Image (tube, rainbow, N blue to C red; front, side):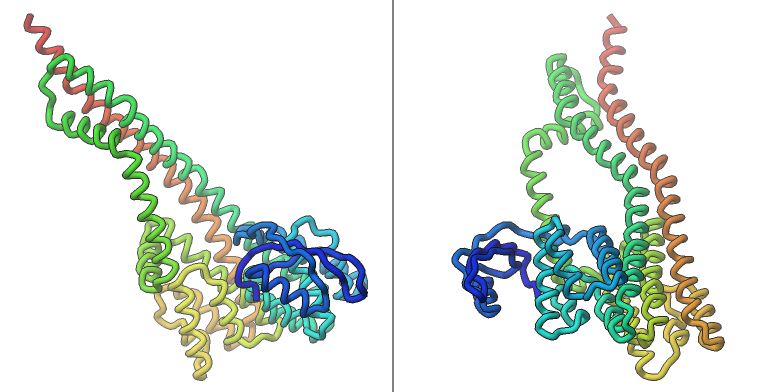
Length: 402
């Protein structure tokens, strides 16, 4: 298993004594040397080449790789040769290492489904069992084509949600910049103006200018403290399940974003079941794979609860009974499908329904957030201007008495 995403380049001698070189992913230089020696190679030099962050393993690259592998296997090329060919031509060093490692494991007698489990950061949890079925039926090409289609649908939905939220986030960022500019550039000038005029400032103006002075003096310190708190919170969120549950509940209670999260997680659940159940994977095992792909802690725990109910002999519709995270329509449709024996069709229909609902809510969130954000930003700017000009109005009245 890949424990750390460090990329190393090495040079040495092959089993036949010929000069060779290559790349490996490992935890340290010594670990890579031991791995090479175990493979019968004699490394002369092993150098650290770079670090591969989690963002390196892009889903778009995985989809393209799946389609290429499906095409090669469909053309009759053996699996090992297909992996070697893709490893030689792939532009990404990390992907070349993964493909070469898969080919080497297959040469040693491992099945591809088992070899994939060594790279959980690269291949989703749904891949090994689906590849196992492809190996059993001898239709790996169709298996990889289906996996590529499913990953493509998830990636497309994710991109659409991000695009829908992009403009509101841009408005928020612009508003923050405007407020920072006013507090650090405009307000100090007004403070000097009023000080030179000797005007008696109203309470709101004094409070605003005091806040501007504090931000001007300690702004960088406050920014550093906020960044530190954000890092600590993120670390705590990653390590403490209680914090994750609390944060997850708060997100689900948000007016529009909470509904987007709900429908997106329901879509992920039924998309996984629509892929695994027709392929012959049992419902409890399909739910276990869905739990691994859930993007929200509450839905992950709910799916684990479903697995327990099903393994105790209950129907899926009974497990969904009175569950607040899932709408009643899901249970009714699944109960009907259990009696009719059409769970495969219902899972696909529910996945499509909640995928469409997620897109609609994302668009509605954008339409709802844009005017609200503009109203908030405009109100804040108008409020600042009004408070700043209060002393000028008082000065005008004073000058009018002369």
